[in-house]
Amino acid sequence: MSYIPKAVHLREGDGDAWWFLATRMTTLVDKTQSSGGLTLLMCEGPAGFGPPRHIHKSEDEAFFLLDGAMHVRCGDQQWDLEPGGFVWLPRGIEHTFIITKPGKCLQLTTPAGFESFVQDIGIRPNGPGLPPPSEPDIPRLAASSAAHGYDLVGPPLDPAAFGVATAVGS
Image (cartoon, rainbow, N blue to C red; front, side, top):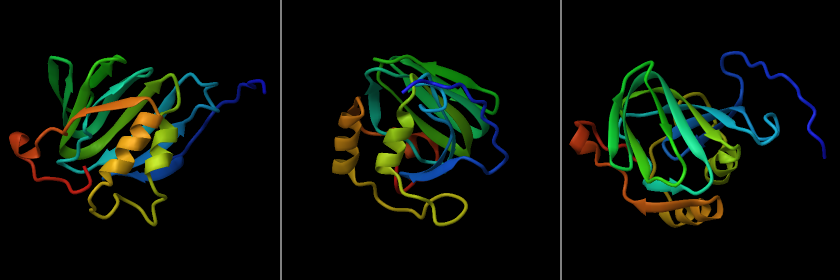
């Protein structure tokens, strides 16, 4: 199969949406559209959501915060992001984040493929907005993470340490 370049244009609300843990992830560019180069997602999440500490074995990850606020840790570095803030998280380094004020960010991974993980864990939304609160299926998350080249190495950040309520589904 050869790659035939094709431009991508999406309007507000377009894209391939998934409820992923406590977030809404919308794929804007996937591996087929970028010839495997990158995945670009719009991520919407509630205050208190954060993934377990993890390591991407073969992907770099970046976040550009559009609105809300988040705290990001990568190795021994940490930052508080406000709208317009950006972080680049190189592969092979433990990292995590917590959303401290509900919002949206652009998430980029390179090379592409993160959207497959979102589809493996997520479910199709049955309406607009975020998924209803629920407890994550940790064994399923761990198995899917391993299958996609991510090592879960610790718990999520504690929402209470950041003055936010616990988000069910984080």
